[in-house]
Length: 217
Image (tube, rainbow, N blue to C red; front, top):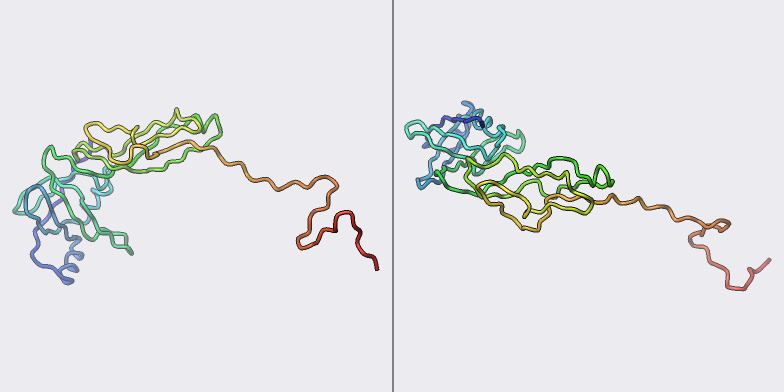
């Protein structure tokens, strides 16, 4: 069973650089909560707690409880996030309130299982063209990944988006888009062979006229 996270938060009224520095000193970051038929709320939340959610198996698709002091708790998930490009640290997050039974579009990774026959027996190579796909489903029922069995693929065979399945949801994307296929390894180009007894051509040299002889001194 997936771990249930609860993140504590407090509403915020002030903004600016001084406020941002104070939050960072306290190990917090600004967050904004949207959706659920309610007004948006600006708050601060623990960086460590939010980072723990992102490190979980569900990553940004993880549903967690946001407990705002004085306002109560609600189920949310990441809608958008901003990362410090230098430190690689989360510095701001937009969170979406969830309504029971509501389906939303989210990105789910694709995991290939097994080793294709085309690789083990036919000398081909497995190429994964798509590593994630958009799905429409209830967030709480979203899989951590969509697993695809590729063990039966032969050289030239392919898995398309139309072949993917998800329980209780829909997969979005071009149906014929290739997820993975087994390709033939290209043979290396061989150097041109020189016929026995023939002199190799010298670049820039002129061939003598047909039937003629070269002039002597």
